[in-house]
Length: 173
Image 1 (cartoon, one colour):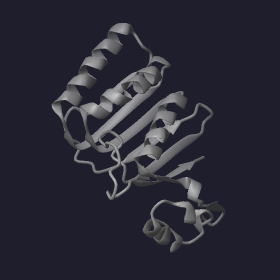
Image 2 (cartoon, helix red, strand yellow):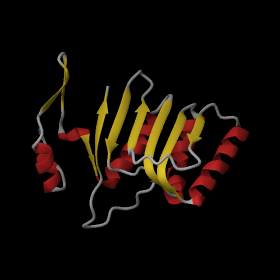
Image 3 (tube, helix red, strand yellow):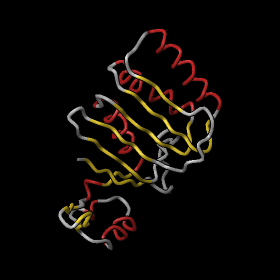
């Protein structure tokens, strides 16, 4: 895999290099994996999530094991703008949501309905017990992006020195 030496964490690069360079999905389909397909650290995950919310034309699906009011508040301008453009934003949280986060979503949903926006905000009100960490979005041209990895999209904070970093794989069609 080209460019893996540029990943910030040497153990991560070593682990990824151990895999094959090409992955056969079907006998007639092959895909190449490069370092640019990996999202590393909270800053890159944040950029990808904001990009997805800004570029989506139809839908964004965000699965996160946890959800906090701080993250929802920080992301709300992007979520709100997506819904205003007619995008359906689906939020699936798994284990823990602070009550402030759910109250914020509930109040925001009421405001969106009153404003008559075309898009939708859909979220679960009780735990789904899912540990999934997934981001799926469209770009309006029948193309989708899917990012799967370790990032709790709706609960992470700033990266601390010496802490484990988030790592995800992002693919597009």
